[in-house]
Image (tube, rainbow, N blue to C red; front, side):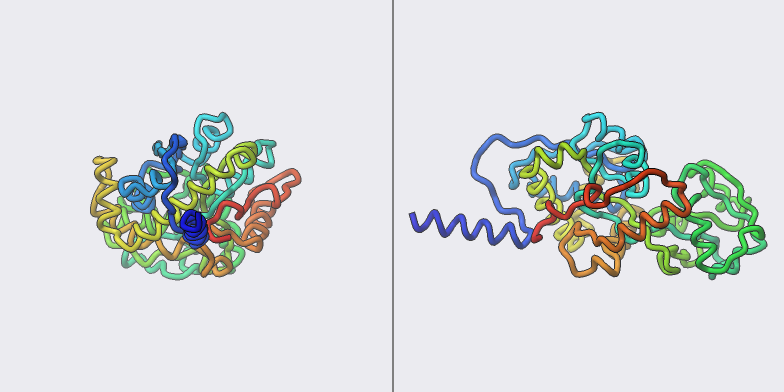
Length: 329
């Protein structure tokens, strides 16, 4: 009897530390996870955890589906096609303002990764250097609405920048072919991919100039958060361990990604993964458990959305995000 009690106490202690404590033999819960985009370096720890059995240890059979952008992933969650999705939090807030009952359960890319990217030798190394230049930008992207906030924060006169609207893929091609002077993109993904083709200047990070806008993370429907509490806690525990161990072993984690998705560029995805850790937290969430989100970051994100994204409607942040499922909280 005492042995069983000690075992339960130890199991609770391990779980509180955010580790994946093995469960008693029982039927596994199937969890479908839809990514935000096609698998890239920062997704590798998920595949690593799957290969290492971290989700199985938590009584979860995890099925990972590729993404086609945050809108598609959020629609999949709203329709009940996927239990959990990874999506951009700005896009999620816009969906919530339209009446879609979604809730963020854990941050993944908390420090906004958007940046200004220019080719080496362009002379574009600080915000004012953008004036008098030509920029390619996708009109459907978050950065399209975020860029005026960046310009205002840095004293850049937007009337002196020629904006050419293009699809996301075309913006990068236009820069590489010399059709524009600079473009935008995530520093640790698009920046890495472009740098492999042509040398680029150090990406100019939006976040370095006072723009606080949460990136992306795990999202579920509000009714899922209410009815699947135990499953979501176990999912987040396994995911925390996957990222903790995967980031310690990036080569092995990347190998797991490539084994699951052979079409992924192994060299590029490994570089992306190695550059990813600084984006896991903001100044407000640094030092907290994996996935923990700060109210201050949500407040600032909401302010930017209201001022620059034309966000309408009342949003109750207490219903939009929760740290309830974050291990160790």
